[in-house]
Length: 228
Image (tube, rainbow, N blue to C red; front, side, top):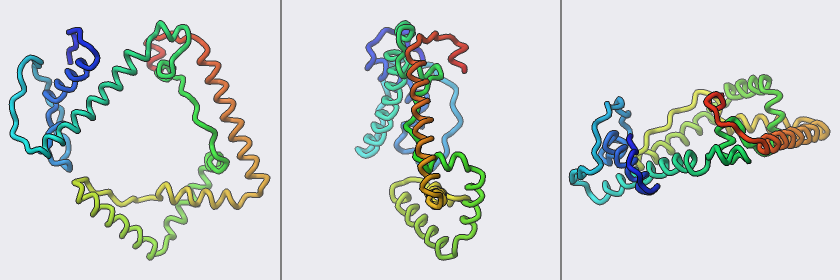
């Protein structure tokens, strides 16, 4: 998409989305079946922003659905330009890097400290995976039927909203896995549980200090760094 004409940011966003709708109309078409797969990407056509958009006979509901799609893509475009143009300024990052500028160069802000049971899970991944898989296979017929009934109710609700059905999971759910992990963690002694908690906080503190130190240094925006 060509953006050679100097315009204000809101006008740029509108133009980008207008051309996107011109090139990829299936993304905005309120008459498209939401369950239908996306067609192959078409070859780009010549776009003239001065040519008026042809009138389309849509109902009020269809106009609202199309507008929802437009608003969604405008938000995506705004976020893109905001992050690329307004926040990430190499001349500023040479003094003190912005959070987005740092992230684009491999400096990711560390997450909060893990819970003690989460560190236990990380350090015992293989053993816990075997335990989870074994208990998943040993579920009773009653439990399996209950899960099937819940999935059927969920898909019925999704169908009413025009959404595609959810497929039945072949393996353990996240909730099932976390339940087993917490149970195994609870079997540890109080001293062992405390040790995991202390080490989790220590690791998080060390990551924060490393990030803080890296953020205090200038960032050189080079192609090599962007590809790391």
